[in-house]
Length: 356
Image (cartoon, rainbow, N blue to C red; front, side, top):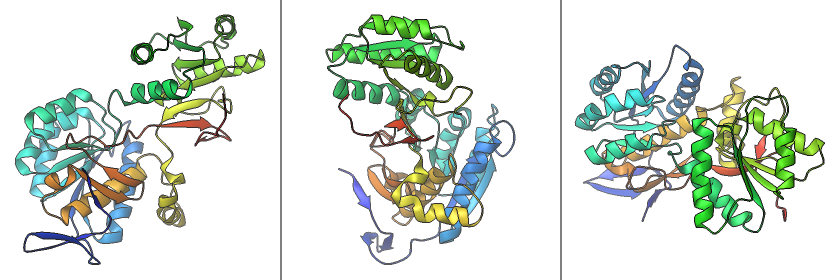
C-alpha cells in the first residue's frame, strides 16, 4: 500500500504527521547538461528546478552533466561534498551507472527524469542503489499500446507495420506477441521502406487485407505520410503510433485523429496552471523537462521533511505540480506515465470518445 503525502510533514521525536507547518528547506542536486548537444534539455531541467526551489527556499547544487565516460564519480563526489539529500535530472545513463555506487555510500537518492534503461534498474535493485525513475521504463510503451489495442480494438481488423529499424522492429514484435497472447491475430504485417515521399502502395495493401486499424512502428513523418495517403485515397484507416510521434510536425503534418501512446503535455494539466502562469509571467515557457523537474524538487522536499529521503521515496505517493507521483518498492513509477492521446488542432490531447 502506498502512503500519500498531501501536506508537508513535521518531525518531532521521530514521529511524522501531516500538519500546517512548512516543509524544511532541502539541499538538492540538479544534474543535467549545461553544454553540448543536450544543453537545451538541461536548461529545461534547471529552469523547472530553480522555480520550485525559489518558492520554498531550497538550495540547489547545479552540476553540469557532460554524459562522458568517467564523469559520474566526480558528480557523486560533488553531491556528497555539498551534503545534498538527493539529486534530480540525470539525462544520461552513463552518469548514473558510474555515480550510483558512490551515491549509495553517501545515501543520496538519484531521480532520473529521462533514463529508461531496464538493465540499469535491475542493477540498482541487485546492488541496492538509490535509483528512482520519474520516466517510462523500457517496455512501458509496448505495454500501453497492447493494452489499448486489446481493450478498444479487440473486434477490429488490426495491422502492424514497421520501418525496419531496431526501435520499430522490436516494439512491433513485442506488441504482436501481446496481441496474439490476448487472442488477436493481426490481419496484415509488413516492413515498409522509411523516408518515402508517399506510402500509397502500403496503404492500398492494408486496405486489400481488410485492415481498418494499423499500428505504425516508425517515426512521425512516416506515420503522417501513411495517414495522409489513406485520407487522400479515401481509405478509412485508424492510425496509432508510439512515443516517437511526439516530434516536430514537419515536413508532413500529422492528420487530425492519429493516435499516439506518449507522455502528456504537462502544461495543460489543471493542477499545473498556477505554476504555468508563473512561468509565463516571467517570459518563460514550461517546456519539456521543466515541469517534471519542478515536480521532482517538490518530491525531494516532501520526502526530506519526513526523514531519510531514500527510505521515504519508496512506497510513497507525493502531490506535485504534475499530479500525484508515486514510486513502488521497486523504485519505478506506480502508474505507467504514457497515455493514449489523439492529435487534434496541432496538439496531442485526450481522445474524443467514439465507437470506432
